[in-house]
Image (tube, rainbow, N blue to C red; front, side):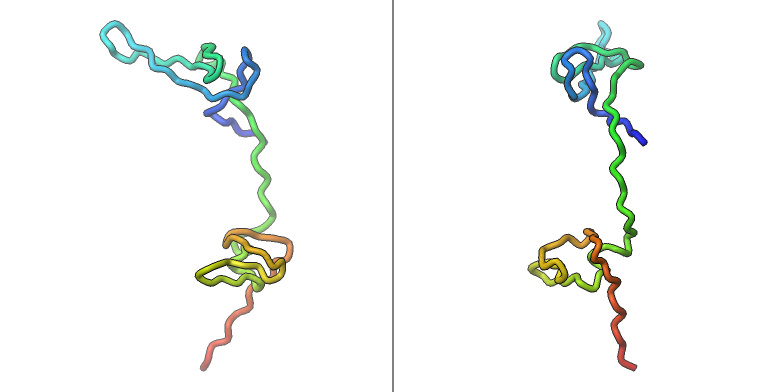
Length: 111
């Protein structure tokens, strides 16, 4: 499934992925009457209904849920200096996830 990236266009004139520049149009009394849409690189003008926005595929979502992040993994160790995965022996972020995920065991409470 594609989604439109509204701030960039595929320019038909310079054939680049360029930023879309929006310029206001004023009348003789300095009242705003509209907008011009320009390529950010070659400055060619586009009509409002004819803007060639960049279409990109949505990033694929991993098959993991929020509960399967490093913060809820048994291998995750966190202190004030670092956050580390003891399985891979490398530094990780709290919201990372990997194929070695093991749910954290419940702590035993004293009666």
